[in-house]
Each structure stands twice: as C-alpha cells, then as structure tokens.
Length: 128
Image (cartoon, rainbow, N blue to C red; front, top):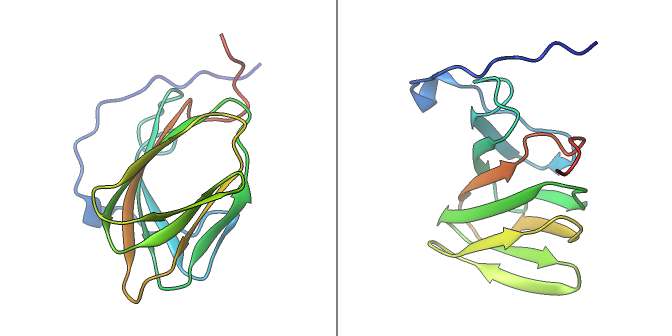
C-alpha cells in the first residue's frame, strides 16, 4: 500500500535548492523543483524554474495525463509541438495538453530561463 504524503507549506529561497539535470534533459538543461513532490509533497502540481545552457535541450516526449505551461523569462529557444516549431522569447508562453509530442531547445547564445508548471505532478496518476 502506497503511503500518501501530506503536502506542506513551504517558504524557501531559490538559492537553497539544487540544480538538477532530470532524465531526458541534455547538455546543461537544468531545473530546480520549487514546489512539487520532493519539496512540498504535492501530488497535484510540479512547479520548476529551468535554465538551459546554449544548445541544451529536453528530448521529445509525450505526457499521458499531465498538462504543462512553459513561461519564458530570458533567452530564446525552439519549442516543438508535434510537427510545429515555435521560436519562444521572453514573456512567450505555451499550454501543452496531454498527448502532444514536445521538446524545447536553447537556440540562443545565452541561457534560456523559463518556468514550468505541470499538473498532476506524476504522469502515472489516473484522470478523474
């Protein structure tokens, strides 16, 4: 039987959280989990800030049930959504529903910094 973790309130300084290169991310595609399963115990939301070095990327993938919002803060990159390619720059954002193949690559000369909100936190959770 899986133990259900109770979410906790969190007030934190981003500098205290480690940068991590998650599976499927390459070349310096780093993220910090600001609020999610590891930091708050949330099963409903995973909120991250990401910093991709030039040429870093997340490989093409598809989520079964997760929805995502990406919001670009700095830099530029190419976001693919199925067969379409979109140049993303500061203040551009995208909503990615489940079932859409997507990837994101820093095509600029400086860091690509963006926020990622994913719900539910796990792609294994059943839709209700």
